Length: 86
Image (tube, rainbow, N blue to C red):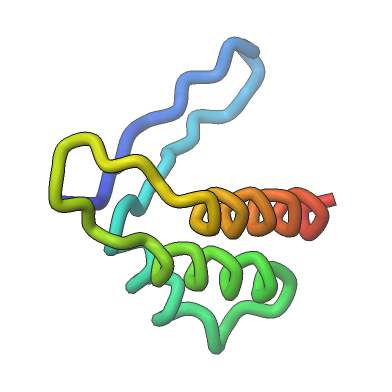
């Protein structure tokens, strides 16, 4: 689990066929760690995503709200990622 591969269907009839490969969950962090030494342009985003993955804690119960500190860290990471992607 953790990987998806599917064909991306474009609405534009002149668009070329393309495929999308998604890596999810813990596999995403593992993949980023493997490719990190080879990244040049997106390295800061990958490092931030790895930090985010490492900060995710398993929840014991189905609904266990995040603490104020956890929410603050996620918000800061989100703002930083948006600024890196500009």
